[in-house]
Amino acid sequence: MNYRHAFHAGNHADVLKHVVLLGLVEALKRKDTPFFVLDTHAGRGQYLLQGEQSDKTGEARGGIFRLFVLHGLPAMVQDYLKRVQADNPVGALVSYPGSPLLVAQAMRPQDRLVACELQPDEARALDQLFKHDRRVGVMARDGYGAIKALLPPKEKRGLVLIDPPYEAQEAEFDLILAALAEGLSRWPTGIFAVWYPIKQRRTLLPFLRKAAKLPCKSAFIAEVLVRPDDSPLRLNGSGMLVINPPFRLDQDLTPALPVLARLMGEGGADSKLQWLKQEAG
Ligand code: SAM
Image (tube, rainbow, N blue to C red; front, side):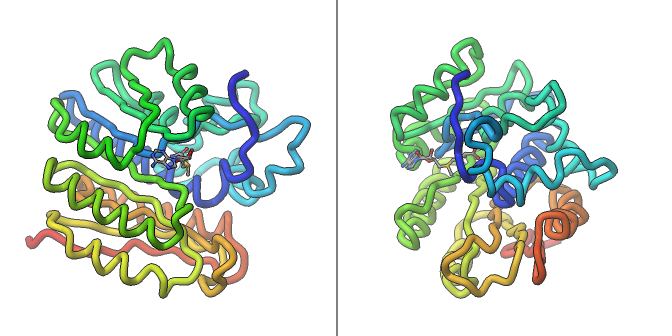
């Protein structure tokens, strides 16, 4: 099989990111007309969670493993679990689908995905994964640059997911804000979703303040903290900034977030959905 171990795949942050991502795709499917998705930092598309090194997948044990077999969860969480279960047909959780695979499996024949991945091995694996899927284009290139090159799409509606590795630490926020400004100037009605890590809250505030000033109609953040956000060394939680969110996504997420915090969290777990900018009326 063409996937490999990844120590972060399926952790609490992936769960939040992918629940919100699938909620966005489902909202886009409410209309029959085609939509476009750009995944700027796509990864390899599929990750192995068990096997000879399964003791090293500790992070997923605090994430997807806590949810995988549960029933009766809020609809958005249940939809996400159905997608992950579909990738694990024998019932045991062995493989975890990354963002491009989740999107490709949820979208329809008329929809289109472009997935960008800079790291050559990851891009090769991604290319292999989608070699028979004509709806999906894989580009081994910088995802931020793709915003300039590919927007606006001919479909005129859709989504950009920005999920960088934050190797540039806080400087990544400046790259993201510049990419969002560029993206919104080219495609003002596009939906833009940005995943961000939460270590210490105060380091996030300038980013969120600047995001609230972007020229968009509306924006909210959805966050899940698995422990208090006061340690700079650990991934205490994460958030998704959603710009131009589809109608009702906030209402659908509201019951899901506290359940995710409770199921994946320790003491001090918390969640919130907060509007940064809301359309009048
Ligand atoms: N979005 C994926 C998912 O949800 O399954 C996970 C992506 S992972 C957090 C970030 C990926 O971005 C890594 O695979 C890394 O190689 C890739 N990457 C780093 N810098 C990049 C860039 N400038 N453009 C595109 N990909 C990049």
